[in-house]
Image (spheres, rainbow, N blue to C red):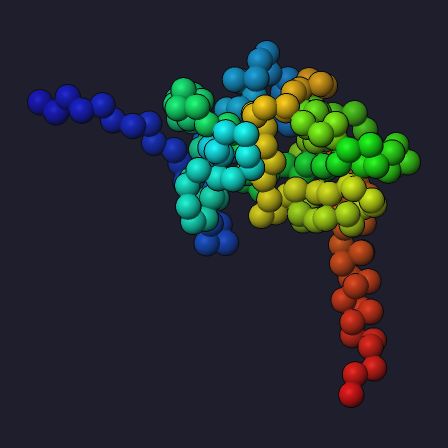
Length: 193
């Protein structure tokens, strides 16, 4: 009799050559009763305590899990947690400090699930797909989506708005792509020798 404990298995989807853990679809309008329940909706991976550095070497996307037992084991081992935004179906708007908050005040950003960051900024969580970027929406306003991650559990990261995660506003992804298209067009129009 084999008495070894079997590890729970996750359904795995191979998409664009990345392994994505996907035990169930994300219900963007579900408001969980606590932080542990929220974690099971998203794909997470461990990061070194007090940093943004993944614990595992190589492609951090290969180590993500939404299995609550695995996430709890990482917590018990003393690791902080980060969310794989792409695998979790999230586009997170990252407002860096007071400048980012002031820029966001001029935008049409609906209230959604929000986490305060250690330096006084905020992460606004939206359900949807979009590119990761640096200051394409304005000064000190970044986005984390495709190929990006955000710290979710670590020193100085605190949930300040537990509302449901809303769908990404219609204007954000086109705005990110327009700015990218303008840059490409400007390079193409240059008169090169």
